[in-house]
Image (cartoon, rainbow, N blue to C red; front, side, top):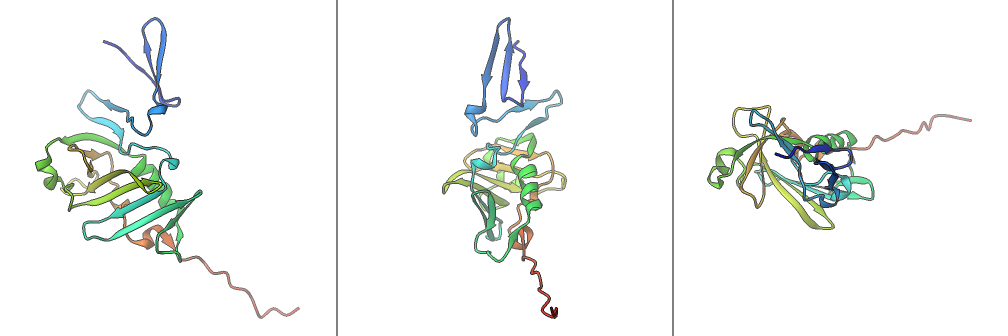
Length: 196
């Protein structure tokens, strides 16, 4: 049995076997996802195959009613497509990044495509999150909150069979309402009654 030492800060796994060997996984990003299985059968791993803001420049959200919302990054600023009158709420982007993009799953639920509907992750159910870089889709994931467990959600990456459970409820963050993501800018009034 080989024991591995994880250095998450440097994205390395060291294999202690008398000589210092390590594998640098940073060059495999965004294709590498580290998962750890605990003795009780739970798994902790990243939801998304990407983990830096530079990995994508467009976020597309679509709910089961067909409502859509697109967020676009230009340089370092995010905006809401077709809603130029709204200013992005930094808190929503930060939370989305932390909880959805940087979120974790804790359990593999099913590998059976015939159960997708049961968990609400078939192609016509749930909410679809798609990430793009230079108009090329990186990943598309379907999330659902089907069932009675309101502290977790189910999700499936499009093109894959496995259904996973998120480690916390993030479904509300996949919101297609523009006002969830942005506010109308505050207009500063000028005091025209001042006389010099």
